[in-house]
Image (tube, rainbow, N blue to C red; front, side, top):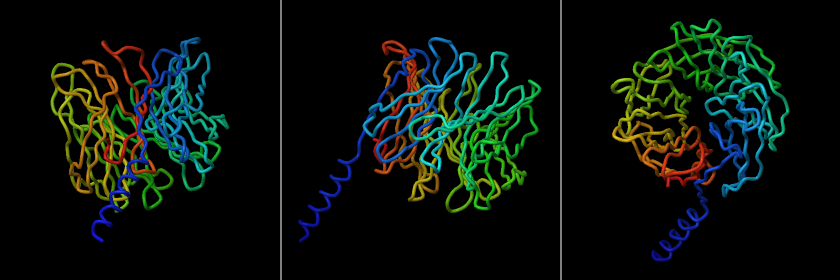
Amino acid sequence: MKKILIFVLLIITFTTYSQQIYFDNRYDFNTGRYDGTNGVIILDSNNYVVAGVAIDSTSNFQKICIMDIDIHGVVQWKKSYHNPFLDYYTGVCCILNTKDSGFTFSGAVVDTFGNSKVILWKFNKFGDTLWTQSYGNGGFNSGQQCRQTNDGGFIIIGTIDTNSIDEFVLLLKTDSLGNLQWKKVYGSATYNDGFTVDFTFDGGYILGAYSGSNAYVIKTDSTGLLQWQRLYPNTNGAAIITVSTGGYIFASDHNEYTIGTDTYMKDCIVRLDSVGGVIWYKKYGGIGFANGIGPIYELSDGSFVACGQVNDSNSEKIGGILLKIDSQGDSLWMRTYDLLQGPTSQNYFRDFKPTSDGGFILTGFVIPSPPDTGTEDMWVIKLDSNGC
């Protein structure tokens, strides 16, 4: 009986892992110039959608690029959206699933005079445009992460600068068609940037931002009214989420030291209580001038996974990383991925999602240097539950 049980368990294990699908692909969005990917979603059980930007070969302006790939990494469709006199930019985690099975794209659009607006673009599941909205009246306005609210509208975090000197964290709330309902601005220092936003248990929002050389975390109520704010020294921004057991957690990088014009950093993750107090603050991996980590997600077992990039302090090569930690911040594993192997080639992760088979889908971009060939391209990689 014992032998039969062991045999059955082996069969189950083999079946589970044999059902996982892996790929590690590079995609040129037929431009030959800058294919940077800043977002990925799981469209359904058979498809992923990635979004980024590229230089349009005809107009020389930057365009939005969206691509649908199946679970094997095979392209199903590609679409691009552009205006011959406008540049488009992606936000952090720039693509979002919506409740109607479509998705949105958030970022910024810049005219030839340098004026920029926050942009929110709504698509159906086939990548057809349903509507677009932009927000801002001159100066600098940039959108980053967007989330859909319970009323079907959207909350967008970003940055605003109306006097070419000071930048402030921007929070926009829209209805389901992208019509602006309210706008809030936060920050008192000269330089503030908003990056990520999440919902809180009391119906408000938690904002991850950057201020000077500090991670900047802001808590608001449901109308954007400031409730508290905190700075965390020597950290470069906060990719923040609400934790299921209460409080918050953010991924960032910690400034270790500076040599000349280069700041050398370690990846770090910080666990906060409900009012922003530090529960633990932990660093991971080596020190490098290109280190950075975020976004971060909580898994069903209470662990956390974050992606980013890292480089050795003795090398110019940059690799994508995926880090998994337990609920106390102890590292379970940290893996590095190099699609390009050249000694100065660069491999960046910008977003990822946990997949239904227990694995992860990650996206970013690669920049080749000899002996690697080609142009800067989109990069999408599918991993198993152990990051392999």
